[in-house]
Length: 328
Image (cartoon, rainbow, N blue to C red; front, side, top):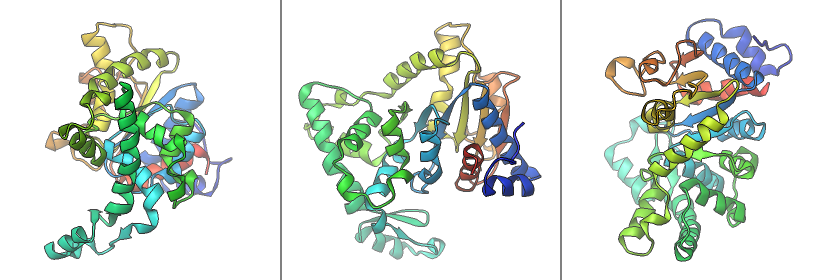
């Protein structure tokens, strides 16, 4: 098992102070992640919640650049909100006292075109509408040409075109979507329709401006993943690092039981590492709160799969685990 001897100050701090309970689980999970990669394994990272608005890109982007992540599954919100932060950061508004806001205060934010995510308000005009203006043209061009792409592929197209560079308001190295686009990293975005860009796309379909089929579907994402997984699960296999829960985690993890049980590919390997950062409690019956061992009964994990669970705030835990893996 690795130590912090040759690592930076963050890793040394973690190893020295994080000795028990969730802190110790964090260290175990980080070392397990590193060992998995060292032994030749690949890693999927899944992003639920508002990780992009929480600026996880500050560490996630470097993980992508250094090849510590091979594939990402994320919500539509995380896909778009990293780009929104990239192009509109200075217009964001932080509300530290958000717990004290009255209904009228919330209405005033809406009237001023701010959408609140806990303590962070996203500016509608500079973030949503700015992105909408440019992404619509890419959607429409594909529609006119009879072409079809996945949601993340359209986002890659807009980033790679350079059209948004004029708006950059953060250091581009802190955008995980830019890092992913540069590497053409595989991404799966289950339930993309449940996002601002998904809603906007739906509005164009309803108005008859764009065909719904111009956007590839979730079923096609699963079919693509069903092809990708067996090709990459040889040797040490593919690990599963789950931030939060929800559809971003459950959709991709199910590719294994789907291949094994429904496609009858009895030689498909289980996920070979599993870590979950979650604040959900298992007794409520949610996938987000399901402990790793429950996943054995669904054919997702093996009895011997290294399993870790850190019951804490992902905005605190994930950057620390990434820092360990990066040697910071």
